[in-house]
Picture 1 (cartoon, rainbow, N blue to C red):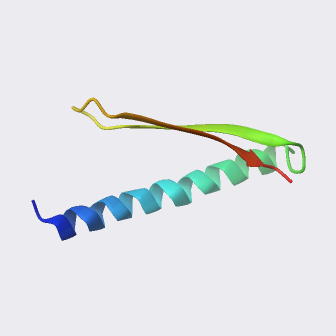
Picture 2 (cartoon, rainbow, N blue to C red; picture 1 turned 120 degrees about the horizontal axis):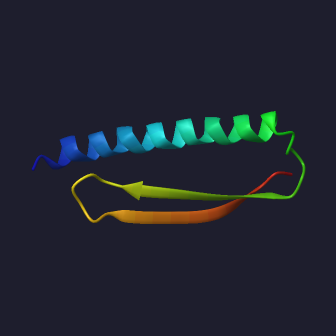
Length: 64
Protein backbone atom coordinates (compact mmCIF):
# COMPACT_ATOMS: atom_id res chain seq x y z
CA UNK A 1 0.00 0.00 0.00
CA UNK A 2 1.24 3.47 -0.85
CA UNK A 3 1.01 5.22 2.54
CA UNK A 4 1.32 8.73 1.10
CA UNK A 5 -1.45 8.16 -1.44
CA UNK A 6 -3.68 6.56 1.21
CA UNK A 7 -3.05 9.42 3.66
CA UNK A 8 -3.78 12.11 1.06
CA UNK A 9 -6.98 10.37 -0.05
CA UNK A 10 -8.18 10.00 3.52
CA UNK A 11 -7.39 13.64 4.31
CA UNK A 12 -9.30 14.76 1.21
CA UNK A 13 -12.33 12.72 2.28
CA UNK A 14 -12.22 13.98 5.88
CA UNK A 15 -11.90 17.59 4.69
CA UNK A 16 -15.00 17.14 2.52
CA UNK A 17 -16.86 15.61 5.46
CA UNK A 18 -15.87 18.49 7.73
CA UNK A 19 -16.70 21.27 5.30
CA UNK A 20 -20.01 19.86 4.11
CA UNK A 21 -21.07 18.90 7.64
CA UNK A 22 -20.38 22.41 8.91
CA UNK A 23 -22.37 23.88 6.03
CA UNK A 24 -25.31 21.55 6.72
CA UNK A 25 -25.31 22.36 10.44
CA UNK A 26 -25.08 26.11 9.81
CA UNK A 27 -27.98 25.91 7.35
CA UNK A 28 -30.27 23.97 9.69
CA UNK A 29 -29.50 26.29 12.60
CA UNK A 30 -30.09 29.37 10.46
CA UNK A 31 -33.24 28.05 8.73
CA UNK A 32 -34.76 26.76 11.97
CA UNK A 33 -34.13 30.01 13.84
CA UNK A 34 -32.23 28.09 16.51
CA UNK A 35 -29.40 30.62 16.89
CA UNK A 36 -28.80 31.57 20.49
CA UNK A 37 -31.08 28.86 21.85
CA UNK A 38 -29.14 26.33 23.91
CA UNK A 39 -27.29 23.41 22.39
CA UNK A 40 -27.72 21.19 19.37
CA UNK A 41 -27.10 17.48 19.94
CA UNK A 42 -25.32 15.95 16.96
CA UNK A 43 -24.16 12.50 15.92
CA UNK A 44 -21.95 11.34 13.05
CA UNK A 45 -21.84 7.71 11.99
CA UNK A 46 -18.98 6.54 9.78
CA UNK A 47 -19.36 3.28 7.90
CA UNK A 48 -17.41 1.73 5.04
CA UNK A 49 -19.00 -0.66 2.57
CA UNK A 50 -17.73 -4.21 2.88
CA UNK A 51 -16.21 -3.67 6.34
CA UNK A 52 -17.46 -3.88 9.93
CA UNK A 53 -16.58 -0.19 10.45
CA UNK A 54 -19.24 1.60 12.48
CA UNK A 55 -17.63 4.61 14.17
CA UNK A 56 -20.01 6.88 16.10
CA UNK A 57 -19.14 10.37 17.34
CA UNK A 58 -21.68 12.24 19.45
CA UNK A 59 -21.51 15.74 20.83
CA UNK A 60 -23.19 19.05 21.42
CA UNK A 61 -22.80 22.35 19.62
CA UNK A 62 -23.38 25.47 21.68
CA UNK A 63 -25.72 27.74 19.74
CA UNK A 64 -24.65 30.81 21.66
